[in-house]
Amino acid sequence: MSKTSPIIMWFRQDLRLDDNPALIAAAESGKPVVAVFVFDEASEGIRKLGGAMRWWLHHSLKSLTKDLGALGVDLILRRGPGAEVIFDLAKEVGAENVVWNRRYGDAEQTVDATIKGDFEGEAKSYGGIIMHEPINVRTGTGNPYKVYTPFWKKFCEMGLPRDAHPAPQEIAGFGGDVASDNLDEWDLLPTKPDWSDGWLKVWTPGESAAQTRARAFMSDDLDVYDSARDLPGDDRTSRLSPHLRWGEISPYRLWQMAQDGRLSAGSKARETWVKELVWREFSYHLLQEWPDLANENFNTKYDSFPWRSDDEQLRAWQKGQTGYPIVDAGMRQLWQTGWMHNRVRMIVGSFLVKHLLLDWRHGEDWFWDTLVDGDPASNSAQWQWVAGTGADAAPFFRIFNPIMQAEKFDKDGVYIKKWVPELAKLPAKYLPSPWEAPLTVLRDAGVKLGDTYPRPIVDHKEARERALAALQEMREAVDG
Ligand SMILES: Cc1cc2nc3c(=O)[nH]c(=O)nc-3n(C[C@H](O)[C@H](O)[C@H](O)COP(=O)(O)OP(=O)(O)OC[C@H]3O[C@@H](n4cnc5c(N)ncnc54)[C@H](O)[C@@H]3O)c2cc1C
Image 1 (cartoon, helix red, strand yellow):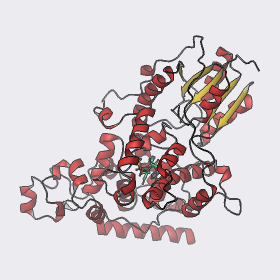
Image 2 (image 1 turned 180 degrees about the vertical axis):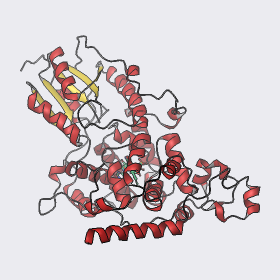
Image 3 (image 1 turned 30 degrees about the vertical axis):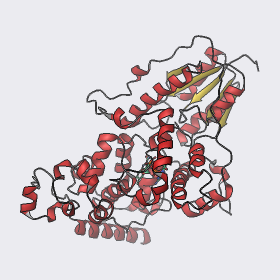
Image 4 (image 1 turned 135 degrees about the vertical axis):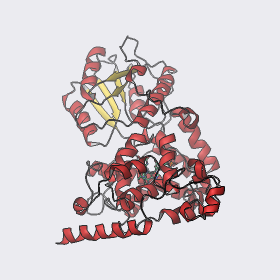
């Protein structure tokens, strides 16, 4: 292989310079680096990005272009089926090497395997999106883990396979002219309507913002994570999920920042937080082993579950018009900002699946379209967790009571008042269930149920009984 032939660095779910093993390998090869991002909606089986993720990707690519530009490297943008684009680009620039960090979706892995099989030069992959390769984390009998706690224990036993690497200081750029698409022409941003108005005040996509966010979280909130993480009104979780989704910051880097020598010294909050990073990891390991996690029940018993079909109620859930304020607050936070607090994701998920008896795949789909952090592994794994159909899932019969959840986790109603402003003048004690407020209280607060705010679309008690009856029906069908 020629020393001067360029090497292609293919960015995918790793839009960063720090701790990017493939980029380091490219830089250290001494060859001129051709950096490329391929917008691939054309390869077979690749799932199209949801609207909120497209918005994030646009801004993240702008940021990466700037960061690479500062090192003298252009980011080439191409659109089309990944393997074809890479073959064409390699031919154009005369590259004999291509490097990337691994992905774990089935369709993505098929693309990568095609390149590894058919590329005439050398195609090499690295691990950078998750911490351990799934093949290396096995039970005593050599099987993949299906239960989180032993997975976590194994993870702790194994430790991190490597330290986080600093970003390369220098990268040899490729001098030649290489055609690149114009990012604006990819139409990743919404236009008609532009629902992203104000989003750049809430979010700053890109590596440098990810690092700033991580540092701020570690210094201000990490040590109270244990007690604050379930309070959506406090909003003290890291909000790093969209940055992690696009790999703007590496889980190795975060693990090391959070650990800071203190995890072993017994900081419970730090341990709780890194355990969440390991939930992300667990989801990726599941995805590797069960590639159809977004479509198929992990627990196939649920294939005969008697889901209902009700477009009107699905729409009410999507739009935050169920009449249950904590559910509506979450769904509106999601619609307006592309993100929802984890506690509320569990509440709205349980409500869709158990109170409305609508298939979890409707929820997974809606989240995929509206979340900035819509993740190929975590979204489906977590929806299956909520629905009771997944690996190590919450049992179906554990049905969240949306009134009690609001009373417990949004005691003063800060979260509900923020996202359901038409109820903001109600005394906090009535916010979880406004229909229980006396008429005079409702009137004084300017609330007219069924007019300014919906009445509950289902009765909690009846919905709970119906869900349990559906579970029983499925059990009888399965057990004969
Ligand atoms: C129905 C449902 C769907 C979800 N869909 C997604 C999704 O598409 N993408 C996504 O990143 N997370 C998803 N989650 C998990 C979790 O809600 C978010 O990761 C979390 O709310 C992100 O906020 P944060 O960054 O402040 O998290 P923190 O509490 O600060 O946690 C740190 C990081 O750990 C990871 N993490 C935390 N909780 C989980 C979890 N339960 N499962 C997997 N990883 C976790 C995330 O990467 C997160 O950024 C979902 C949860 C539910 C219940």
